Length: 633
Image (cartoon, rainbow, N blue to C red; front, side):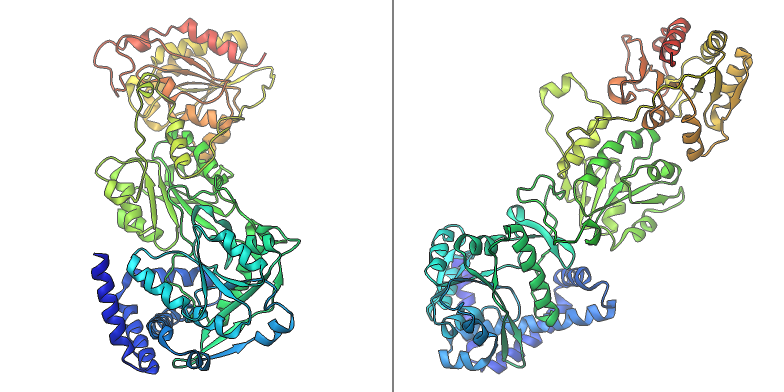
């Protein structure tokens, strides 16, 4: 196959070279203009890149016009680069106007050893033919071999024909260093995504993985840094601009690399249609797009902070249940810490918005109403986010972000949605995992770790309100459970506990729940015959949070309110029956879980099909003792 592709390449090159250079330029301009309309994926990439670079400076119409000029210019320059290596030295020199060469020689750089800092601007392949002509010293370049060995060999011959020395990236760094120390100049392309080995630093105020090789070579060899660019200057005419040489000495590799990126920005702004916008310069790493674990880390220019960066926008689809939402908060916090430029948006059912608004690490909350369609949600999300992380495992949430065309969509597989995600987290289960189940919080933390978050210490310093000694303690009671009756302890036993604790402490009781819990609460109030503040069905989620914070303790079933109290640092006495506290118990040391493990538990059923033995096994005395022990001394 490589031979066939090479044969086609040679045939096409021979046909193109029959034309004069001006004809090739015009043909390339025409083909590039056509490519704007035909190559839809590249067009979208170019438009995205231009929006990143110029969203504050240019309108959408101006960006589209710039994208069209870019395609045309790129087509012309790429086609011309086929014939230029076949032209004689004198003709190549006549095609290019050079600025800054005399100043560079006057500064004594030519022959003193330098790194020629170049990029994919204009007809960048001209550098291979032009530099041996215009410099008195020897010149070379560091390059990466092409995938097709036959085309690679031809390109090497074309680049080296006038005396350019070639150093392959994998093996030639040492030789390139020796070359610079001997007074030579080495060209390095600096504007490509550098992958996991790069330094993350601002490029048009957005973090991009950047090669540190130019700065590193200049510092190792005490060589100069000489930025240069080639611009299109008419039909088959170009202009080479050599900027003033810089000394990297006294700087760190990181500081010098940041400075190089800023110089490249200035070069691109001079004639933006000439740069290689079809390259995914701001590529999102996979799978770890959070940057905490990367070797070189992040570097900013002096005097700048994370607030000066364009945000990396992370959409997290929150869980639909209150308890699950609370258990995912540590993961959200870990994700936010994962990048200094992270902007975290939570997409959540409207009923849970108040919880997320209280989480400091959340920058924005978007709500989904009950009657919102999948398409209406997707429309609100389009063209806004870099990645989406899906906590729920449903098909619907995957469809929302897929239809929104969010570039990276991360989540667990299942429910026929794997094809809608492009980063699937499906860890292999080990035998030990089957023996010892982990808390649900680790389900979300594992997903956060999968994308690069540091989850060490994520569960340290969980909120815990300091005990307040009162004359009359305030105790909350949540006797319901939205999931179903299998999770609800007996109302008459709750009533007995309320009465006994009241007699022992004179406590003030507050009863929480939704309107569906009214029959249960009425039964408790009638049987307890104790004054209680009845807040059932009378609070918003925000008001419920405020009321819970007035309590010294919450007596509760396994409910969302239990998790909410845990989130707020309120101690709980939690009664478990059909569910498993190891999986979904309240987080923190200030909680007491009451659970009798019977033969059929945990069954996770909504309704008990037999005799409710897991709940009836929990006696009133046991609960009273737990409440009295948990109250502040």
